[in-house]
Image (cartoon, rainbow, N blue to C red; front, side):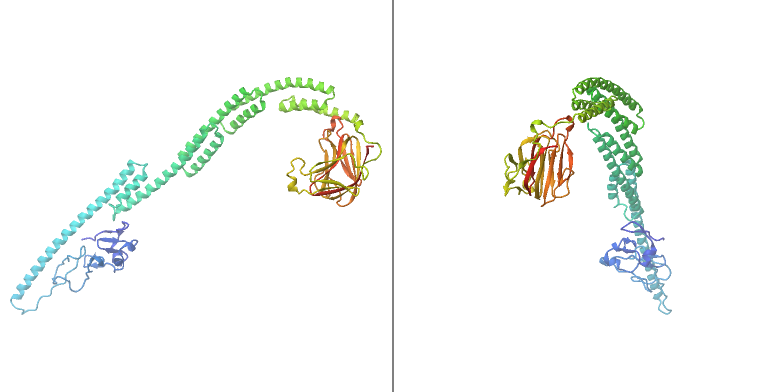
Length: 578
């Protein structure tokens, strides 16, 4: 008889007789464990010696766990349980599939008596009969075992075929196949079909992962489509997003879904181009005079068509519409410019140059882009040049009623203190001490911020307005900074007050006064400018808007003191500007 075939009870792999013989594989009762799964055998069995071949048939002894109480049967010169018989073999009922060759029976020596041959023959007959019965019984067990094994293998094959049939009938249900294989694995245990079922499970798991990835991608695409359905959706951005997804899936090998995404992006661009063109037309119909916005929308449509091939017809429509808008706009601009020119000529004749220039600048702003706008701009420049020329020939004169005396006249000293007033922060103190007007402002910058009217600045000013004058101050800046106030209450817009500081830093419109030193400050105010000199050095500022020919220098003169500052004025005198 051939050797029985064993399979590992843990993994289902075939176990070779060599592994059993050498102890790499072991058997525990009816269960066999391969070298890889040896550690999964019950602890007492895993430590036993390797199974050895028995007799001449080469079958292995059955090795059972000590827990079952079965002892190992060894080969030896004598066989336990049977008398030796010469010639022939006998299977031991406890050896299972293995066999044990029986030892030969030696004949008794002659002279043993007349009954000895008969007894011996009887014994031999009994032994042979027993051996025959044993052989028959053993053969029956082996046939039954083979039949059971064949049935088990047939069931294992049936389990595998059932899994294959389910896969073929349900190719899109790998999860259902995995659950079925989990149940069928018990029937295919310890057979070659167990490995095949495992391969089916691996393939199903791979398909499950692929389908999961596909579902996630389809969800992303559907989310993008949902965003595009909104009325205010940015179709251009959404199309770009879907194009990015298509590129990723194409690289990943999902060509089918990449193609679907590309078609979706194309469809969105179709909607974008057509919707943009229709929106531009609708806006033009509702706002025919808002040329700039209409032109912008039509240019956007043309730019969109240029980005995407295949929209030449839509681009041509937008271009034709834009040309019609330009023609209509130019015609309206020319008509309006004729009206503006008539009004400007009237203002120009009355030397109202600023009003004329304002009319032209308004027209330029309204009709920006029209060809006649350049003509309007050139006309505005001509009027500005005419104005400057007229101002040069006829400069503004000071107000005669506000002119100071021609000679130096004390404005403030120890004897002349009337006419001066205080204003601004109440914390600022201006008081005469030993013939010196001393101004102190103790406010901190934080407290000054609370004063929403003057930011903590305190004023000392003369209540009479002057025109075309200069004031000379003998003063000392003890600390901090202050302001020279000119044309207060007059027309001057910039600069009505000029700061002076004790440090050479700050804006260009500042005067530097050496701190702690007596200086002479000269403030010269004309109709168009103000000039400040400290010890003979300084600079000049032009009043804003002086070109109108009016006296911007006429107004009240004074000083202002910033928080955390102190100033001393010993004298102030005024005269008419030479």
